[in-house]
Image (cartoon, rainbow, N blue to C red; front, side, top):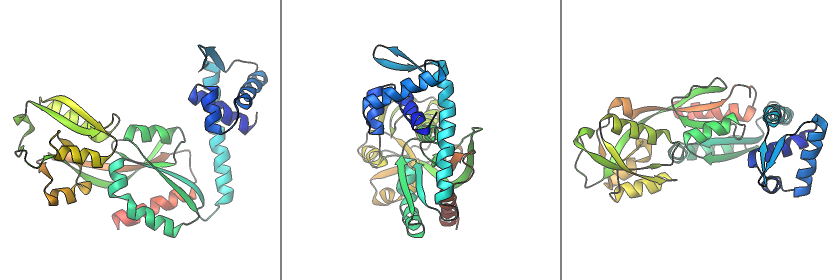
Length: 290
């Protein structure tokens, strides 16, 4: 059972299709089919059921997938340990919430690249829940996400404490208490964003009906639509200061229990040694905490 076969098997399991797996692996479909057939013959068990032209993983296949993930990660760790024994080198896959990427990371990433030019740093922006899944499934090495995070397979460190504020269009009267409102529309990130859920829980807890959720993939779009009067949003002050100074949006009183939140750095416990990740973590603490 070689690593190349396991990579093919994992791709098919995740894609549910030989065609998509072949595209992802930049190979031909016949190679993918052959690899899967050889694995099934080696193990003497079906790894996929063929249902309506789709491959559905069997219980035995799911068990193998767990081992395949661990073996492939160990193989990658072995390569990285040899390539970057003491000096950070190689690939570092970083995930971050959109707002954190915009407000906190530009200067930090520039400093990291200057200090560690041999690290191939790649950044992916996504909601917290997606980032957590990506870390757990070894698709990224570490991520900046919103608290709280409680998972036995994840190591967690506080990166920065953010202040969240409720904002609306500049001409909206000040909302001293959300209970002044009966219904509201909100502008927010897609489902899986912790700020979105915090805002919805706060409003519903105050007896307010959220009658419309306008979803966006970038904080600039959210701010623009808030400024246009399309609804309220709850965002970190760190990405709003220039807009508040310009007077394009208005901030409203936000209770401490809602306003204070921690941005966490998370990674897998079992990735015990990763020089590039450790170097990034150290630099983040240096830059954000002085």
